[in-house]
Image 1 (cartoon, rainbow, N blue to C red):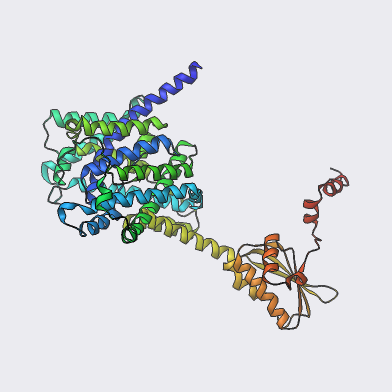
Image 2: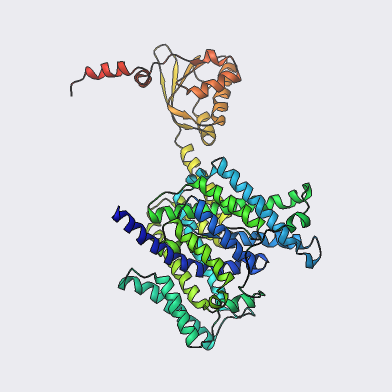
Length: 537
């Protein structure tokens, strides 16, 4: 019992320290994504707090961090702009349409959890996963480069650039070297504190969290508790026209949010060698977005960068996410002045180390060891993640992988032909019969020159879809039109049921008598045991 409590206490310490680091890293990310979406920074910060807290408590993956993300913010830009155009500029209708869309997005995500659609993440092939990780690492890296520009969009130069590079390098150096000296201290948090101390006490002219918010048009980090948005009901008309406007956005946001969350969940599973609950995560993400929509947040999903900071900092339990979310609210309420003094360079250095840890460097070593199709998928997903967004990249990767799989299996259909003594021609079909192999299947038969009696044996074939059943039905019709008799053997039960429903004639065509030894053994275990007794081992 004492050992159990000691381990729990040690893990709690890691969760708390890691949660503090995550909270510091969440601030500029949430603010930046709010600016991207065209809303006030507090809308992004409230989303990070509420979504982070709810998913940490109720989500399916302890240790995973959720909040406002860039993938969703990019979609929200046009939504907010179109909403603002529906009224006066002072009304900020776009913001309230955003809240309504986030609520509908959450409902869609919860429905995905109710209908257990989260399990479909298992269909994502490994090359797609590697491409997603590499692409996301590149996206995180590119997003940090914007921190090397001033308010006018010009790149830093001279002393300002060298100071920025020096502080970023120092942050990365501390995070790299500290674990080699001791693993009892959280390297990311120590690096942020050290670099912040140097910048503050050295009176260095560097960009800080506060200057970043003000340069973006915000008034600062200071704010109150999230308030229930009663104006949603008065400013957004709940009618069919509104539903037609927000539903496409809600559907896209829900899909992107779930894909990014479930992909991050898979990645955290691999890093921690444990397994999360995908359907529970869908429900938690949906519930969190509904709440954040009603309380003035911009919506969100899992954040791979912050999740990796948490995992690498030792955060494994739900406590780490709870600490990060609660601390973020404390920053907003009481410690905005202190957090605004943290230099952006320290947070950039932390994110650069996340990039190095996220990128699957092993993908370079295996490029010449895996099939060309997998190489194409890996590179395509990485590229599309950078060029478009995660959802498009993952869907495209899965489609490419599915097409390659279908093509490869379509080539595996075989037909062994032989003539019986009574003149019956037998076709023994080997391989999967599905929509991709239909053409090759039809080419195996010589209806014109075949004898009057033909038998097709599916003992080594699997009927996979309706296209295959339709192909079998068409084959039977062609033989009958040629005045020849055809028999089908060893069809699966579900295939037979569908053929019987399509036409009563199949009861005369399909052979129900089972004469294959494997079927006898499966049906009669006693016969199998008796057969074994005849052999001497």
